[in-house]
Figure (cartoon, rainbow, N blue to C red):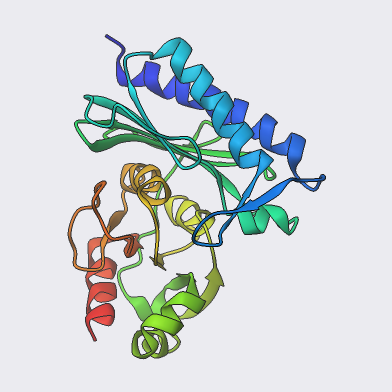
Length: 257
């Protein structure tokens, strides 16, 4: 049986494979479709996931796979890989370089390894539970900030939060020493590397947050849903990441009003 370091080596290879494939499509001519929820799907999404699935079929044929574009196989198995081939398809379509590739390895439903790859930036964040997080092979760690009024806060999916939770949005606009708006996975990666202190996110799917969870936690951070419950395949997609338990607790108070 493979040890975690071996899984990490395979994950790094898949991140490299995905990055090369994504760069081949980026800022090129794309065939675009729309899902039932009107989110766009491109040839790149499908092509990247197909390549990663082919790698997994060759090296881990007994493992389950949960991918955004090509569905679920063997979700009840002990080992499951979870894939978001292009996290941020709208960014990708608009030529914005902050789209990502997400990969997670779950054991009995619990994330043990996560990858946040940034193909256009040439960055790969790799987190292994109990072993830390690296950026392109070099260790990174969350900041030591414990107070929100001295922190850099990222608000992901701000338009959706404003639409569905206007009072919370107003509180967020008065929070943090400074705040930024964003989408997709990169703010969580910046948190794992100590550049950002807190991230609030909304309306995510398991392939969006479970790979990120492993990266953030391995870097020393805290990541839960808005009710302080552990994230799992059944979570509702409302997420808070924070550098420290104290900062996470303050974010939870902010959410609760």
